[in-house]
Image (cartoon, rainbow, N blue to C red):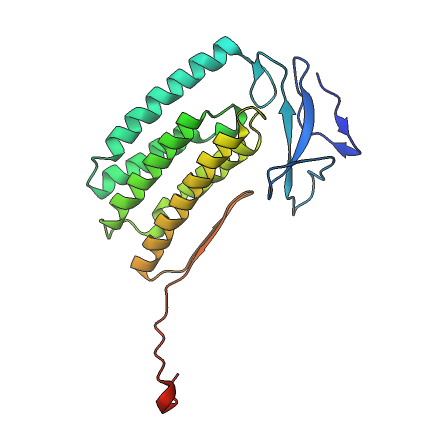
Length: 219
């Protein structure tokens, strides 16, 4: 079990199997020496740096368990991704949102491989694209995606140094596609939309037309 003090900051995680608690800046993804995790305006997070052969939120997942978990997660996400590419009805789109949210709800408590993030990206893009074709699916009905994107980014920020670059790149791409999709829905519906999490803040508002005729003094 790790020490629960680090550079004057309390660590809220017990890191098993020789893991060591450290802190990460949520804005930059870089390691920092201390973090006030009890602050209401926290911009950092604690994570466990696990020793070889141990993984997960608190270093309790061994190599064999991780392999089985990744295989199961990949199979489920692949199935949801295939279904999301062919759904047409509003009911099916919302069902995809719910199913995906259930699968990824605790994704920040175990390692997320690049493949899972990329499959998640595909699911979100397909679902938001289908939502654009369904006027009954307003932007407010897909807000669950904000929580999942926030969770995936949280997991990416806590990834091991050996894989952090590719994982964070995949998470950044997912975030960009999510924001683009949400923005288009908000514009379609002429609705103002705000949603935020620990790592995500999305704000979309209808565009206003601007007509300028300087020669006539009309702005």
